[in-house]
Image (cartoon, rainbow, N blue to C red; front, side, top):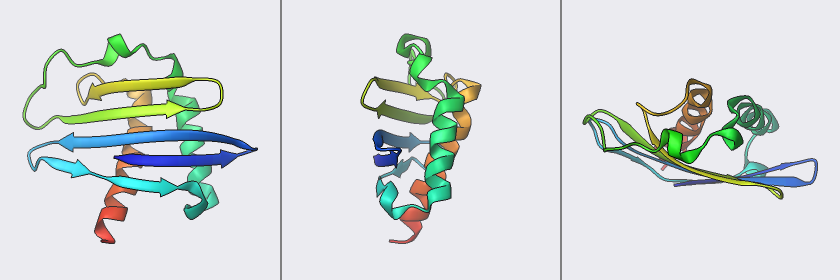
Length: 117
C-alpha cells in the first residue's frame, strides 16, 4: 500500500497504490508524504498523473475479468484531490499505456523504500 500526499500550490493529491503478484508474488507496502520527497520527484509524480489522464479512465474499462496469468502484477490505485476521486483495480493486461509510467514510478519508490528497511 502506498499513500502519497502531494502538496502543490496549496492543494493535496492523495495517491493510494498497491502492487502484488508476479512470479515472486511481490507485495509492496509504502507510506510516503511528499514533504519527505525531493521536490523534483513530487513534480514528476504530478506530471505523470496529469499525462496519464487517470481521472478520465472508466474503472469498468480496466478492471480485470480474472486474475490473469501467474506473472501478472495486480494494482490498486486510488487518487483524490479537492475536486475528484478515482479508484482503479487493474493488472498488467488491462493497464492503459498512458498509465504505465505512473505505475512504474510508484513501484520504483515502493521498492526503494522496501530496500531501506
